[in-house]
Image 1 (cartoon, helix red, strand yellow):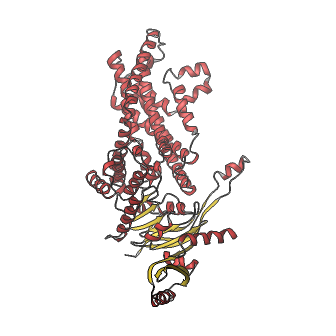
Image 2 (cartoon, rainbow over the protein chains, first blue to last red):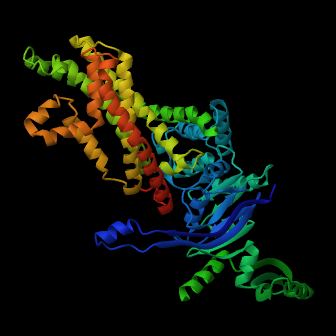
Image 3 (cartoon, chains in turn orange, blue):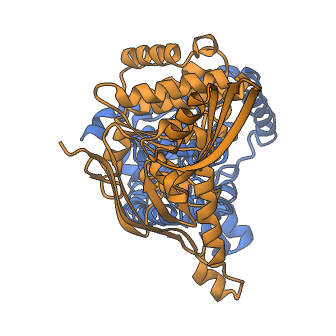
Length: 314
Length: 276
């Protein structure tokens, strides 16, 4: 089997002006078509956690919805494990689970368990296996205590975890996670990240398309990241390579203790040069003891800002 | 093939969900039963005004209470056939749950059919209540073949479901302001002979307005059911409304499915499937 799980080729999406002919006929103002995606191409490999970052309205949601078969592309194609998202949409939906932060996607008067049971049945799970799967997911996502509580009574964090549990109901090989830690407390968010990581490492591995505005999280979790801006993919690489695109240098602060007390020295170095080694050796030769070393590298935020600034200039 | 095999499970999923939501509003359930009883009782007393005065040319109206109850019960059912398909889409759109339902490996026609299954069960219960209360408390008698009456009920419901599919298509594209709802919903009660014989329309409103009743499937469905249950007619005597209903079906079924397919494609292209 191919190593490719998601293959996106020359994908463009333009939302047409609604009722253009009708509005023209009645001489009403016609809205302009909205170009949400323009010639997007990339592949996601099996077991990869692939990050998608960009500003609000950059095209992340449209891209995710096209992969999830909810929206049809204008041109180009999306294949999930070899199935076309338009021609074989039901096949694709069998392969994916989508978790969004949208609270309204559940039935508020049903309990957490009843909600998941309904969706499990739609996935075609038999009742016994559905109940067992729900029990396992509740244990894994620490939702046991709220299993019999109505969805409307859950905290925002628990609603978010329930959305992730729902996306995993049919054990899909592909997960589309849209800000899965947005409303979680720091501990719960760390556990969620750990679970996401373990899903990608399990056998068989789960492939994850991950969108988040928490760039530190994206940097920690994702093997590769795509930067999307105004519907166009601006760069795709590992987080480290993307940072290096912005700046190949980093600022280093070394704190040391000498005969006259503590002192701090700062310098700029290129990645992989030997400035740091030389500085440490020099300080140690002077009899100083190294207390702390801090580095200031370019972050994904710097990278994002750089592309946004370029776009604004154009 | 797999979708067909899983269809009963999926319909059950929707029915179980809607039952749970239904019982979470228990008071509403009891109030509806009380309101049906109140309507039947009111109609009983109104029918007493006409006792012995019914025009003999209106053979179905000798016992107005039986005719009204049949009309209300059946109209209730017909309207479910017509409105539940569009309502199911509109309700899921408004709740925000349509997207999550459509993310499961289930196609849109299945969602529409399965999510209206509970409406039919509920309506069957409340329609039966009209007839049951009439029989138990007010001695209303029904005769004729219940199987034949059921055939009419089924056929008319399917015909109205075709109009319901058109209405659902409209809901998908325009979201609100469904013209079929206005025409069928308001028109059926006035022009189908639910509360008075359709012949009176011609007499008092003229032949043009009176003939509106002929283009409504509910008129023919109701006429057929009343001929069977009230006049005791057999199959040979009810072929005329039966043929008319079959004619509606032959025209409306392929047309509504064609329109529906186009509406789904348009909504997916515009990305407006989940908007309301």
